Image (cartoon, rainbow over all chains, first blue to last red; front, side, top):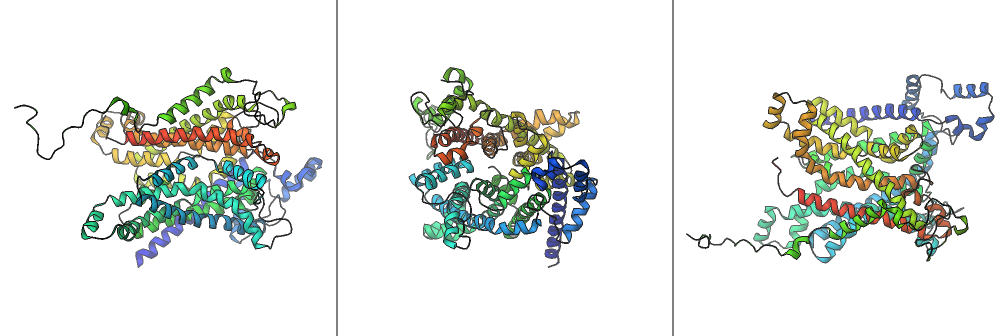
Length: 331
Length: 293
């Protein structure tokens, strides 16, 4: 019991430390970038400002302090839950993000769940039918889709389903004036969701397939077979169960991939989510926004890495974690 | 005692030598040939081009494919067929350059981390993990902003700098298993420095295991280039690459100019699939036996 508390404490410490380092790094790097944050705050009016007015404006936004002072000012606010004002939207950062995060969670969350449910099904199916025509076909399709950039797949889907067939909407999260219509929202979600799922599914299915095949070659399968267990039972009861630690850690490690993919897809579909927001904030030097968004995604990713390690250590104490970690990064 | 009589019961005789026809079996012949065609086409683009790829002929803006414009023309009236071959050079160059940059960083960091004492190693690995937990897209945007206006070199550096972690991890694991070996100890005892040990003793041993990942990095670098250029963060429209050709795609969508989206994309994907197939073949054939050199 004591050791469990100790591990939890250690992980929390690592998590906090990682976030701190991340925030310093992003804070520093974002301010190294050239560009005028005033321009995103005042728009084109910035050119008409007199030097004095400009100085006063910069003073008000705290842009003249040394970078360390700026950082600690930010940190003091952040610890109290005040993340500052978005230069671009002129509203508190948390408010802007809060209005959009639901869209991203819907897209990313459903996409994630669908990807992994389908990947498991496909992976197990292929492993059970190794080297049959269907298995080979699915693997080939997987290789090809792994090479398709997500933005291109989005473009092609928009071209087919929106421009030529006119079946599904290709941009935004809802039609004008239909913000509360659930069906309309679902229709807008369909194409981005398809890209998120199709872009990642095959790769993970392939990983699960290979892991299952490894398991099928193990000695205990031979034993189970000689005892007289039917194939189906061996596959689902024994092999699948042994693959679960790998499956869970792949799930945790894949989170950054899926987040990255979601961001790109959001931008192509002009879907009002966190992805388009971070793209905009990085382009227009919206420091406060960028900080929060990077920390948010960073926190999720670091958390998932920690979860993956812990889950692996708990389910399978022999330390197979390192191995899956490496293979999961290949893409 | 004749050789024929010396046969253990139950053991299969050696199989007859593989027929000549079968020598190419299981090898990615089609991929290699296609890749060869594309790479050569791009290298000698001048011989294939039917028009000047940079010439903007606004009278033919968004012309669908026909006899004169084999793949059609883009929004600015440039000939897509010529642009494909001409632009492929830069796309391929960025792919390989980024791969080289990431491989060098990965080998140096991975080896240093693998040879370092445990605490330093853990700290180094943890730190890189934190920095790379920022989604690549954001990191690239940030770096791009610092490096200023994008050109081929800066884009390769940005992509290379953000894609070395997975290779470094493999190098580190390999180095950790190798570093206790006698031949490393002997080399160090005889005064071999870091670079010498790395180059003569470590690199030949871990190279086969990172070879496949390096090939895969070419693929992801080319995907990254096209994605960045498409989003307007990579190369500008006047530098022709497969990615920057796609940066006009939003415009093409509205007018339904499918050839502007499909053709550069298909070339990119064909190249990437070929590279992947070659990489997979490399992985299988290199992993066959332990190298004792």
